[in-house]
Length: 522
Image 1 (cartoon, helix red, strand yellow):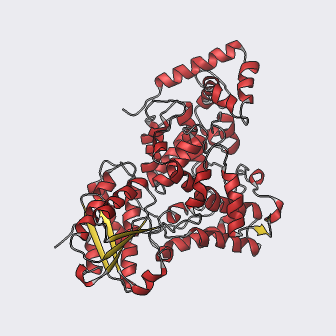
Image 2 (cartoon, rainbow, N blue to C red; image 1 turned 180 degrees about the vertical axis):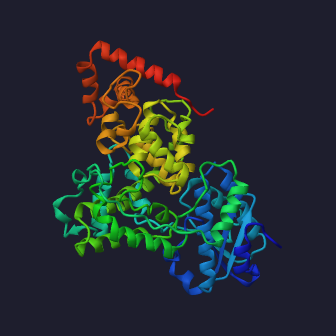
Image 3 (tube, helix red, strand yellow; image 1 turned 180 degrees about the horizontal axis):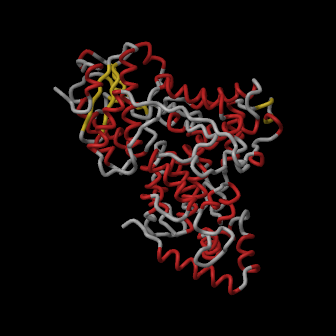
């Protein structure tokens, strides 16, 4: 039977007879690496099952680039498994994963194994299938991460910060350790990693990949089936196979890792990648594994090809932050989905959908998301999330946007970053302070303000940078939270004691005018 948009798959993978197998493995779209699965799978070669779920794709207006990446990488992996001698059942369903899996199990008498999904809803659905097929389905732990969740999740709370976890995981892995001490004598080198990019500093080119016939078929599917979804699909240049992802890892290690550290917080007009690796999407679906990425960076350091502060900063993002937020997710779900410490209820500003705004920093941060589903972490934290908080936007609306707009976003990784870190929606469980700033920080770390219609040196009034008065308005209105944090309580004192009554009134008036005129999604 012909299946539209699956011609490339059906030409390569022939539907197997289910009754010929006594064991099967269900592989999700973010578990695409057999090296992370138990060894017996490669030895015994059970039936491998892949499912495309239309209902999952429609559950949020996922970026068209993201849907293309997810489906194309899964299809490529399924074909590679076939070429490696596995029998593969590639199934598509109008429903969700549990619908597709239940339909398969109705005609299968063998034992099916699935790995714990990283996302909560999919996990609940598969466990429902396990309950319905009690003697036929087994679940095994997710092994695409380095840390054992059960060892750490009871520690999650306001008094347990990522830095504590990071030091312990460094000791466990031995990464950048000199016996019991950190390499170089310091646990982190943040002080060396906050440089703005010098003018005319040369920047490396990113390798790009032309879509093959499999990807082109997926792009056609997305264009015609998910027409109203977020983002553009005028081109698609991401890696979709492990070999391609390894090429990108090689390129990062050779051409960008050394300068990643100093400029990891830098921002530049017209370039949202700079020296960043852009490897998160490949780590988050398994094409690359965290240990191999870290070990490549360590190898570059030991060979003298990358400075210590760059390698430490990069490894901290992977074994520190990435692992820590996954543990946070497991400890805090599902209640954390409703976190809203400040009680904001405003809808997301329309510029998050259109990219149209006079604010140059917002334009530069939203535009690449619309076009590619990507921008780097400082754009996410100190511009997009900062602006969301300062404009009193419901953090749950921002969380939803991050989830569907970013190509590397899965709930386990974006929810802690948005509701825990960048918007302080959890009230300080993950972060020790609200991450908000005035235009001064943006001006320090970027060249955006030079090209903006607003004046970053002007504090209030019509042409003043909105970040300036929005920031002080936020400090004033959220003073209880600032006073409770030992790190930023001095900002309330600055507002109270160093701002004149006229300045305070101008801040409030400018804020009220800006928020009243701000267009928000309906």
